[in-house]
Each structure stands twice: as structure tokens, then as C-alpha cells.
Image (cartoon, rainbow, N blue to C red; front, side):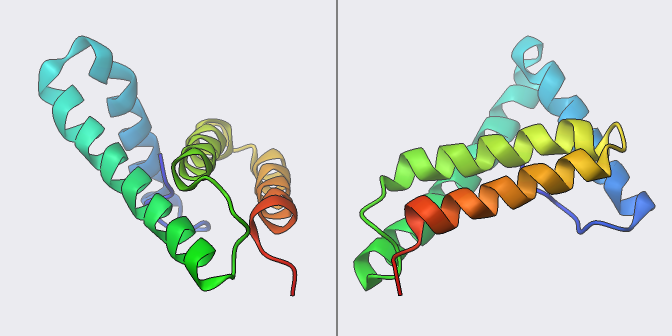
Length: 111
């Protein structure tokens, strides 16, 4: 899942946890599965469009938009699990730092 709210607001962090809980029930509940799948597909498409535009403008290397979007989304989903739900902020910060390093090394074009 993407970060629905910014860090630092404990009340808002509950939204991320609640969304994650809904995702965990989606495979067993058709009522949840459809809208949650649509949301995740929307986020994937938006991220892929950003990558595609960056490739076309020359700001990004010739990265696969869909694969890059899936990697970014999966990373954000995962870090939400332990970073927000379990309060492992230091580990979450490490993952974010590695994600940005990956994007800089693999996706962002050389200046």
C-alpha cells in the first residue's frame, strides 16, 4: 500500500494500519477485494505513468514503467507493515533510504 498519510501523526498512521488490515482480508472477502484491487491498480497505473513520463522526458533511464511501479508499490506496502504497524521507524527509514538509492542508481538518468 502506498503511504496514505505522512509520518509523524499517530492518529493518521492508524489509517495506514487499517488499510493494511483490510488488504489482509481481501482474499477472503469479495466486497473488499474489488475496491482494494481497483485502488492498488490505480496507484500502479499512476506510478507507471510517472516513470513513463520520466523516460520520455529523459529524466529517467529506459526503465520498465510497470515493473518499476510494482517494485516501488511493493516496497511501500512492505515498509508500512513493519514501519507503521509495528513502530519500527528506524528500519522503515533504512528501507526508504535504500529505495531512494535504488531509484537514483537504476531509474534516474545521469545529470
